[in-house]
Image 1 (cartoon, rainbow, N blue to C red):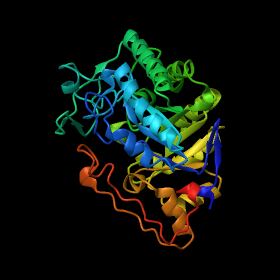
Image 2: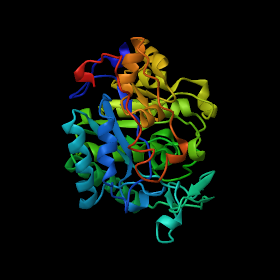
Image 3: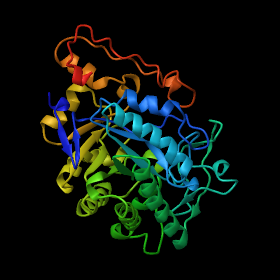
Image 4: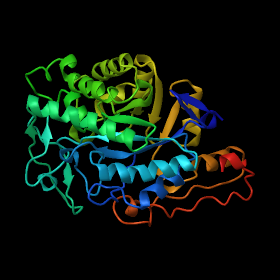
Length: 371
């Protein structure tokens, strides 16, 4: 089964090609991971790679309740407890570096508006710190000096991630957040060197990537893209051309992987092309496919050579031992999957977070090194 075969991701020897997708769970206090976080990630360490949840690189990067940060020593110490336990049980873990941009609200920022490349509000609703939904506000368009400060925040976040013991970092350039707001023509109406042409709109991503690479070797840096999926109202007039240029730029930078979302009903204009194939065609490193895959189609996309790894979100959320269950299923030994409880996705405590049962494995005869 290709999905369960080993893979060399730069210097990381992955025992399988299943990746825990970064999943916001909103269970942290004062942007510091709580004592439950080490258990949550260690439970899922049978994945080839864990990508920890989106983590803001600066206070202005927050846009959801109870999300973690990576810019203070207290945050580093808390994340270190996570990485130490994951490593103790044999896992590998990356941190996703994040800034939501306009997908935020002044309630997070002492009454100041969220920021963006241009003063164009997101579509939909913002979630306030008390988990209420309200209209998005018109963001403040970042000045050149503020852009430079934000790039430096990514550099600091990358450095702090290394101090916290992560094995790699992922630049979050997807889902309509700040980097994708710069990349996309609909949300970036700037007339300076950060707007207009595709090359100009790529400038912020290039600068962020260079900042991260000043702290990490490229073979431990990946990026997540959503290829004009329209998430949070970010749209581009020509997503295929824009994101081919993005993939080529990140390939030239030497990043070890791209992590992309396949076409689905939300993708609008992007549905006319296959984002996973676009990454394969324009990027020289590894490709991680994400977007509602199961065992069979996850295995198929690897067998076809379109992707090298597959990231799983909700299945891993509810099944901490997902690779073991998939191995048993492939062998005809049962191992049904737990159903995820959507009521416990965001906020709360251990329930729906660290209390999903593992499969008892009585009939699976799974080798001890996989258990």
